[in-house]
Image (cartoon, rainbow over all chains, first blue to last red):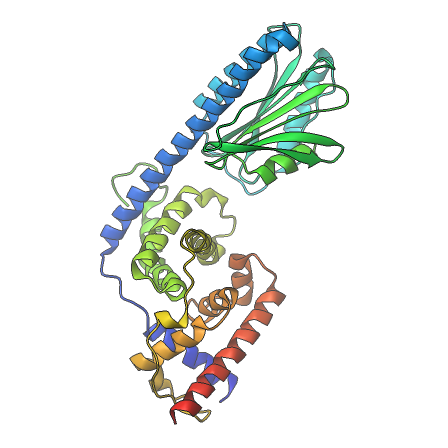
Amino acid sequence: MNDDNFDNFLSRSLKAGEIEINASINEVEQMIIEKIKINRANKRKRQRLILQVAVLVIALLGISGPVLFPQPVYAFKEKVIQTILNLGKMINITVSSDHIPPQLNDKMGMEATAVQPGVSFKIIIPKYIPLGFEFTTLTKSASDEQDTIIISFASQNSSILLSETRVPSSFTYSMNINAKQGKSEKVPMGKYEGNLITFVDGSCSLTWITDDNIMFQLFGNLTAEQARDMAVSM
Amino acid sequence: MTNHPDFGDESLWHLAVQNYYPKIVNFVYYLTRDRFLAEDIAQEAFARAIDKFDQLKDPDKFLPWLTSIALNLVRTQIKHTQRVVSVSDIDSCIPFPSNDNFPMEMAENKEIQKLVQNAIAQLSPQEQKAITMRYYLDMKDKDIAFALGVTIGTVKKQLFRARSKLFQYLRREGDENE
């Protein structure tokens, strides 16, 4: 049998053997609409969980901070809470792209350059941003002596928050994670080691401190791999 | 689509559902052998496609893109249920010609169709996907590569290997049933 005959035979067998769809197109469309509604509700639920986790992280810092890190941690906490609230308002931003156009990284770089003169440490921006996310804001805390930079990224239904702040050289932190909610692990990131918390809903938080005592915290609806790639790209 | 304010061009989606929903259902059905699962995955694939439509850069890639969404859902489902299509899921065994002559009218024969599906179930999961995309969805190598996230060279190899295996399998069945 020649190749074309066999190809035609396979093609016709598969097409002739297809199952018929009993539902009408209108019924199918209604089922698709229901699924869209459920998916969107689930996304909002996941996003609320991320915000709750972020608040929890901040609360933990708030509890341990005053002992090890008296004044600045409050400013950091307040700023992050404010940014999270702002992000909550931006949930419906319609942005989607499978890569970051150069002008967006330029925009982030330009904003970092503009803010840099008033900041006591060098602002670092990620070169890698996960698929579908775009840079939205870069702001400096103006409420305290301690400089804190908050960079936010948003996709159509999710957000990522990156904070940068100077910590004392003796600064340490610890967190207890319920095993049912997620797991915590150390991850190597080039010359640094990060604390990665992955949550069962697919979101995660990554925290690391550099040699010059800058603490970076990354959290949002991204995978552990994306968080690590983002951190390594900085 | 009706009763929802946020689906963009409704007439476009209506056409897309009309033209591609049955194809996606059957494509998933050939991979899972589960009709209800196939319909569920096809609906979910459309739901996600509508929500992520802005991410599609090239409209010509709509079917490969939709297929890749469906494939991801199939993968997730298989991970959850550990369900793998096996020969035992499919009725067998029926007479098949032992010579190299595969008359086209045989393709209309229900038992022959089952045998072909049986043969496809012998292939590796990746080969099953490639062969179904090629012969059921009529997709080109580059579109299959796009949907599977592999190179065109890999698709060519998979199709060549899968096609040879199918031919051998069908020949062997023919010899046994003669």
